[in-house]
Image (cartoon, rainbow, N blue to C red; front, side):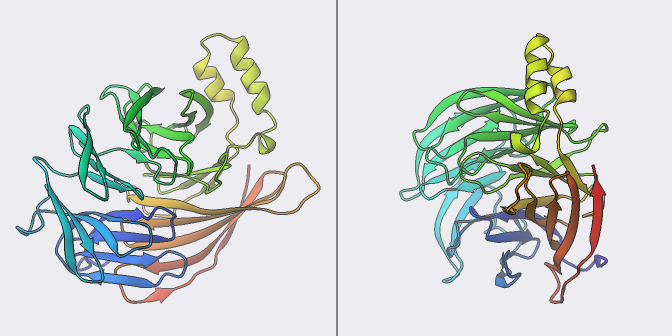
Length: 373
C-alpha cells in the first residue's frame, strides 16, 4: 500500500501502559486505536501534535502541539479529556517539550536540558533534574513498577544512563552500557531490567537495575543501524523476550531466558576467565536472534510492543514459543505479527493483521515466512 502525498504525516506514536491501545499524532490532530481490535476509538483534529500520550485506557491524554497554532505551543503540555473535548490542566515550560510519560501517580516531562517529575494528582513538581543535552527527549519509564523507574541519558559522549525512582524521587544508579551515545532504552514491566542501544546500533544490552550489572548482550548486526524502538515481553517477573525495530526496516527478537540459551552459562564462564573481555563476551553470548525483514521501508520510524509470549506444553526443556508483536510505522500502518519458535530454534512468522492508520480502509493479510537460525 503506497502512501499518498496528501495524507497527513505521522509525527508521533505511543502505546499506553499495558499496550492495549495506541495513539498517533499528525499535522491535523490525534487518533487513538484499540490495538487488539484495530477499532478507531477517537479522531480529533485539533492541529499539529508532536506528543500524544495515553493514560492507561482512560479518557485522559497528554498532548503537545507543533506550534503551528498559538494554542498548540510546543512549550505547553495540555492534559486533555477526550470525552468532553476540554483541557483539564495546562503546564507551561520555558523550552520545547520533547517527551511525556505517565504512571498512575507520576507525570514525567522531558525537555532538552531538564526533566521534571510531577505528582499527577496535584500537578506539583516533585523533582527538577538538570540533564545533559538531550535533544531527542530520550527516556525510559516503567509506569507499572512499584518505584516508577525512570532512565535518562547521563552523557553526550558515551552510552550511560541515570536511573531514578520517580516515586521518591531518588537517584539510584548509573549504568554505563555503551561507548557511543544512547539511541534507545526500555524497561521491563516490573522495572527490574533495562535494555539499551547506542547510536551505532550493533549491540543491544540488558542490565539488572538493582545491581547496575549486565545480564545479556545481543548482537543485532555487523553494520550500524538506528534502533527506533525496544520492548520486553509482558512477563511480570523475569522477562523472556526482547524485541527491537531499526532503520534497516527489520524486526529483531531475542530470547533472554537461560533455558533457550544452552551456551549462556558457558559464555559467562569464559567472560569470567578472561579479565576485561567485554568485547569477547559480547561476541560469544549467543543471541537466539530471529529477524523479520522489510516490516517497513528503510529509515521509516517505528514503535513496537510485545503483546504476549505463550509457551506450549512440551516434554522438552526447550518449549515452543509463540510471540505476538504489534508494530506501528510512521508511514501510517499497524501490523500484528505472530512469531513461532520451535525447540530446535527454528522460527516462522505470520502477518496476522495490517491496516492503515490514516485511511478509512481496513485490510487483513496472512503471509508466512520460515527462518532457520
